[in-house]
Amino acid sequence: DLHSFPTRRSSDLRLFLESLINSGEKNIKLDSDIILDDDEASEYENGIYITSDDIVIDGNGHTIDARGKARIFRIASPVTIKNITLINGYCEDDGGAIYGWNSLNLINVQFSGNHSDDSGGAVGNREDLNIRDCLFENNSSKEYGGALLSTFDSDLNIDNCEFKNNHSQSKGGAIHNINKMTLTNSILKNNTSPIGGAINSISTEAEITDTQFSENHSEGRGCDFYQESGDIKFKNVSF
Image (cartoon, rainbow, N blue to C red; front, side):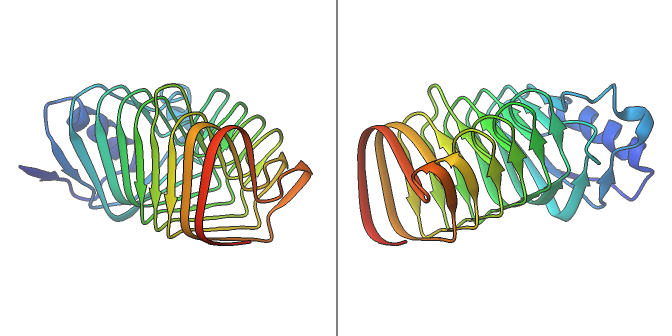
């Protein structure tokens, strides 16, 4: 079943979204933007907590704006998020907009202006992470992965995505990956980091195909891509 909801005050929407997510509803469709209220910041500091399996959140073209006050989602179960814009998420820990430790599918999601004081400016995930038709722009972290941190048991699969103007203060201006990574048909442009201007990888196996790197910058090693360990294969890649 598809459950959507009408326009309400932002605080009502966020509470209603949280209650739907954890009520057993499997398909949730937004009918309005959500903007974090000042008085919600402390309650939602770590994001809406998702524990129900196999939920699909369809943003229906709408935006969730955390206004630099909180993370947006904290995910402990398999979830698909699609057709949504997530902006201005913030967390002291990994994952400025989303942090998860289960399989996560992102489809047609735009991430902009998210920040982590640790790693994964927009997204941090510890299990399989599948990303398709997404945009990561102007996200940042103080540690690893200005836009994206994929670590531990996470196989990272990215297709038809764009990463631009993301910044990390340590490694991986756009992406920091620890495990198997497949990157296809994507663009990484104007990302910056001291090591791995666009991507820093500590990977058992990395494969990059039909992808364009341009204007990425590193003060140290790997303006576009730095592979700390493991094997990497390039096919039809431009730098």
